Length: 352
Image (cartoon, rainbow, N blue to C red; front, side):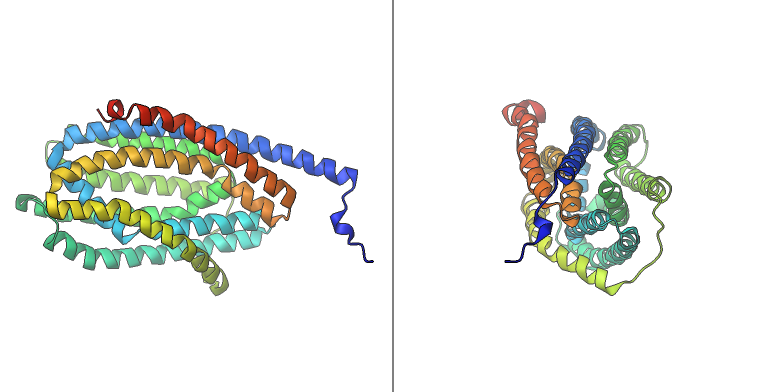
């Protein structure tokens, strides 16, 4: 009989793993608290921002912006799938302690997302522009403003797509405090934009779209600078075909969920506009703001767990990997229940 000694652990190894797991758990707890605080602030700011924007723009322009956002998002629905793949491979490289592969993966991901942004522009400027001008039910006197807002919204989407790898780099390094601070400032910036347009004497809809685009550029710059100087990642253009194939292949599995989610939100929004007009889009816009705030809480809260799970698996620490999944699943359920139950019970009050 051959005995494989790698399955037999000494007391010292077990104590070392327990100590390591304890430090991992403490880091995840602190990250979770940071993200929980970020999400609570962003939740209330997002809900209040919707009210300010509705009062500033009016119901017609608010509905117009909701439908324009739907067309743009319809053109970029697959970027969420690439975001999940980017985070996964960056976390895996860190779990293997392979810094060279980490930098290479991040550089390749940036190239992929830049190419993706050009694809989104191509789709939006052809199919999206045709859909907007031929089928979407918008008052004729607002068409010039609508086309300009469409361009600013499209630029914002491209900036957000390029922003994905830098956000993934921060998350994979478990710098959740920075991620939380930037997220809070981002929510406050959108609230400031909402207040700013109330004092703008000209077309508020165009000014609102421009300020959102400008804010997205500022926060992209902040994340880029932090990745370069805070994390110390050296970014160079890279076209490693093997990594590109891995990231795109992994993204394909997430594409089905992204497609269904896109159809459930933006597809319905467009259909409602064709048959009912922009007033219904305004109503859907408010509902989607509330739904989006809750969904953001769920996804941000789980962000604290995902990098650690991948790192434990990459490091082949399977016993800790399984224990961490069980613990994080239970904690996730109760923390999400804690925030969603009051919203469900007081939905009428929140909407009002």
